[in-house]
Image 1 (cartoon, rainbow, N blue to C red):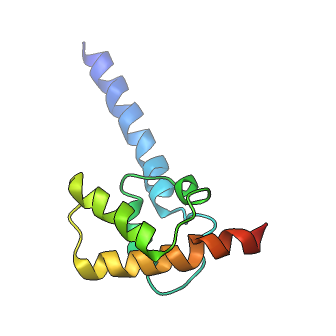
Image 2 (image 1 turned 90 degrees about the horizontal axis):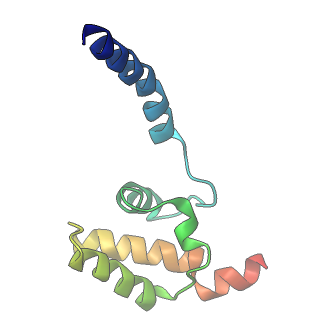
Length: 101
């Protein structure tokens, strides 16, 4: 039984650096613009970076999606929602999708 506990402790401690490295990795495809930091900080608690690539919407569409997240339990302020909607519309809006193709 002691060996099993030691083995689990060693495995747990060896995984800590990997978890810290994963949290420090910056997502690719999110240009620096107003609202970027709050979007990455709040959305990446639940979502990965691939979510936005095919989900092109205008500001109103992004606001709707963000308010649905609030309905599911996200604790965001109106200012945070406005910043994220502006950033997502500018970066992942309908026109941004056409420009990159």
